[in-house]
Amino acid sequence: MTYDPVKDVSADAPVPAEPAQREPRPYAPLYRVTPPSSVLIPMTYEEAEALRQRSQNPLRARAPRSSTAPRGTVRPSEVSFEELERSTVARHYNKRREVGRDARELSPIIPLKRFNNWIKSALISMYAQVGQQPDQGARVLEMGCGKGGDLRKWDRHRPAMMVLIDIADVSIEQARQRYEEGHYRWAAEFFAFDCFRRPLDEVVPRPLLEPLFDTVSMQFCMHYGWDSEENARMMLSNAARWLRPGGTLIGTTVDDETLLARLHENEHSLSFGNECYRIEFDQRHEPGEKPFGDRYHFWLLDAVDDVPEFVVDWAAFERIANEYGLHVIYKARFDQILSDGYANRPLRQLLERMQVIDPNMAAAGVVTPAMSPAMWHVCTLYLGFALEKRVDATD
Ligand SMILES: C[S@@+](CC[C@H](N)C(=O)[O-])C[C@H]1O[C@@H](n2cnc3c(N)ncnc32)[C@H](O)[C@@H]1O
Image 1 (tube, helix red, strand yellow):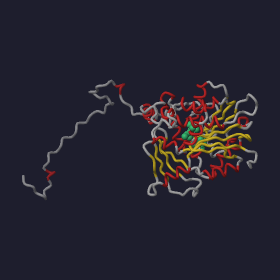
Image 2: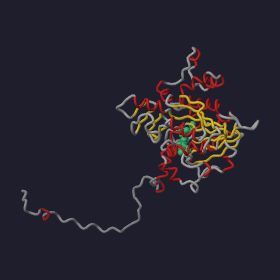
Image 3: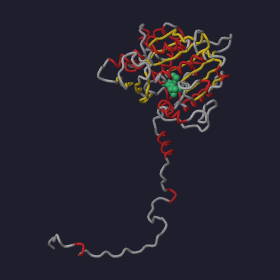
Image 4: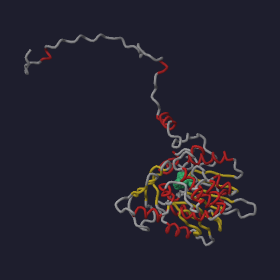
């Protein structure tokens, strides 16, 4: 047959037979290879999420949420969960699961964690105050306590009681659990709320805030609250307001001088770091040019995933602290704290026990941290401080 473009070929096509009318019947496959009960039902979102968490690296998996709130935890009726969940920081720390001591030891940054723990022990032992009454332990407030990793350090200081606060409610539940498992002989109360944006007495019952605390501790958390002068003031006034005269505020945070010096080493890039950490600034500012809200994003191997932090401008910190009656008695970068602590016998022994320093180098008279230079580069980003409350406070 030759092709005729004008002819309608469909007219020659055989007419298809009418399809046979079938009776509708219920779904019942004839050739199934599995019994009917094995039909796979699609997972719900919650089940998929649970499976994802179970199949994660245990160091990174998320803790199952307990349905009951620990005593003292502020629940949604008091602080809206949107308020908590909106915060990237709370979300990040809520996601990080408490893995237990053995699993913690497997972390690739364990030398850095040991060193940071030693730094906190050193600050507690050098600057935490004791209670004012003879034989009475200290009253301690910990803001940004995380999963309660410092409870054992405080136990050695024999506190009378502790109030622990963190914005991440899952972390607070884990801190409470750790406290219970530790069978400590002193009381502790736990609260989940944003203590950089709310006055403490809005949430913590007054009888827990008085008598005033002997020491307030803020470890590795201040840089989350330095986004505005208002929040920085709220954080520091919360610390100062409930501290007795002669009491101390101790803490650790990022050293602004080191941070900005590293940023300015390369004028064409807003980021720097190495295989252990990475920091990326939003904008480049000269030291002191933007005392609040100078934001950068921080990534730390096996610990922090791209969380926004803010440069804590030390001059602004000291100025506001002074207004609230807090005066600096110690400030040193972590490498300096290592030298200072090494001169103190019990702290030197603790350094050795915690395997923070290289024993061979120490025997040869050189104090060298037992970690890679890349990891040490992270440690030297931080400083520790102690401030004393004096009675000239305006607050
Ligand atoms: C790096 S972790 C340090 C945890 C603990 N202090 C330690 O040294 O292991 C910082 C902690 O600060 C908490 N945090 C950040 N912003 C906060 C806020 N506005 N109020 C209370 N806690 C906050 C985080 O949830 C997190 O647990």
